[in-house]
Amino acid sequence: MIEFEIIDKANLGRIREIAYQTWPEAYKNVITTEQIAYMLKMMYDNHPLEIQLQAGHIFIILKEDGKDMGFVAFEKNYEDSGSTKIHKLYVLPECQGKGFGKNLVEKVIKEIADFNQKSLILNVNKKNPSLNFYEKIGFKKAKELIIDIGNGFLMDDYIMELEIRK
Image (cartoon, rainbow, N blue to C red; front, side, top):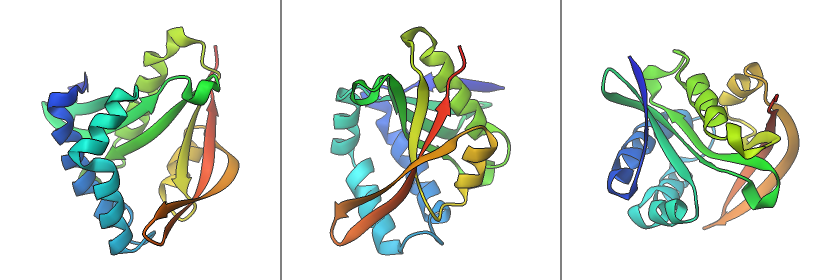
């Protein structure tokens, strides 16, 4: 049975656990192990996660039979754009290909149904194999973006967009 759980400050460690299990596998052929370690610390240590929560990011874990399988983090009306930004979407490597990623995107759409959002947006590395997943569920490449994240590392991304049908 699939369940969703909105995560509060006390449970942010569960988000970190999924990220630390997922990132090395998800990004092994995309970015260096040094960049993976740097970004995990930058985004998933306690302090950054708490700041994201305080800034209005909503974290939802997908569970199957009581076990955490993946999560999504999103922000409604990102930068007053009328769009919701998915900041993070990860499913444990052994759970990929089972529809959990799509379930998480659908959950975000349900969560924002009453907020008159025109689309979902997200950043994805240009070399990330998950590009196929996003395109398959309806996201389209909207822009390209290179972000300097410090320590000599760059994020070379597409901004993907999924129009929300009303």
